[in-house]
Image 1 (tube, rainbow over the protein chains, first blue to last red):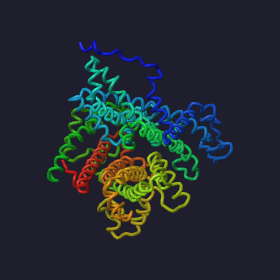
Image 2: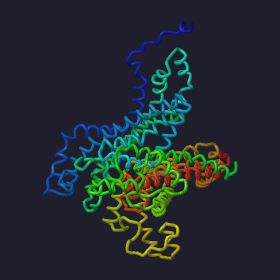
Image 3: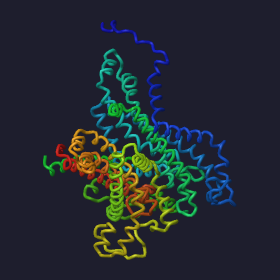
Length: 298
Length: 339
């Protein structure tokens, strides 16, 4: 009966539908730390895409007569113990670290969203069990757990990615759960349920999109975390397998060579700058997207 | 509620959580398709079914999983952490040996982080948007983003190799004769024994790893103190204090900082918890004989008992720290009640 009164949903043009996103984007571009972060991240993405074209040497080409040469005009960042060009290897490293971080973040956020949404929405014993499992994972020192899992699965980048995913998902689950619980009671959700939306539909079209802003902030910060963790695993010898030009593994190669400072310095700078980029971006996103912060500032 | 009752309740809540942690760790080692014996035995020994069988029986690996787990837990409840398959040493003794080294490092790192981080945060907040503020924010960003192991290597390359101001990896000059162990903190033990030579060597060895390990905490503390101070400085009572004609110094120290202390204590507590985990990389780079390095060794060898032991110790530390943080809340802010 009440259904007769309902007006048909207004048809929004594409421009109208994307207006909120555009407004956010505009505000993001006006935020200084966000633009700096975005610039750094985009630059590294370009490097990752174009590495084969812009790297002066192949990352695996050995010149044994040119071993351990300091930075020079031919070799901007010097050469390593097999005479490989470190500059080229650092550029190619972006093709490893960025995709790994992306895979990790997509996997962790998917698992986290699923678990958090179910826990928050279903509640009761399901919630209790899922959250206690999350607590148990969080109780482990993340790096030690990741090392143990990678050691067990065998060294390798994909195994490292899997290990990092297994370590990081509970934080997403908690974040999503708290958002779902807060949003579940909102009137627009009740309204959606009242006009006959199924709980699953309410969850995916009404609750989760509203949890998205906070997730985006976390995803950006976690890209940096994932890169750091992957580099740490490679540094202890459990991530990338030797000829791979992975940054953490390259730093490890310079570990006992203090005189040949360029071995560890440049790959380290690469990790550092990418992580700074993602952190700037995440901080900027938080300024723009987090409603609590906006209220305080305004 | 009395402090004691509160303490007891907190402990009772954590026991099931710790048991869950062991169950999780055990399930993981059981599900993982790798054999811990393959890490310990040589290939020739692995090829001999009799040796393998003997080892399985010796370590109880031939028993069904639930029996192994119950066995582990019942020993754990009696205070026995089990034995390492790789070294055949009791894990409890190993932890006793390595834990103080990590604690000493973590305490030194926290001292550094607090002594630098708190003033930096305060100055940044009072000089908002000036160059000091920008510098403080930059430093705290660097501390969060820098790979710990890389920072450690750079520090070693600079201060040990190039400038030769400080000693290299390790805890103390290996040629020195160490004082008897009392606290496990080498600095304190040498002080108790009156051995100034060891004390100075230990302190010098402590500087670099503490700086590297504390960098992250310092950044965290600077950030939190800065934002807490900014919030407090907008309050009416600060305006009143200024209107009374108090010096800016008094306003900051007595009125603002005390009220900004609450969130700061949480961040210091959290940062300390992070240190225990961050110690893994620092100890690896600086060859520091602590539980971080012990854990890495155990993890690469899939040695269940030591991994679990370290995890339980670290989880226990988190719980103690959280408790101390909660209690200090009540001390710093009478409005907060323990419940």
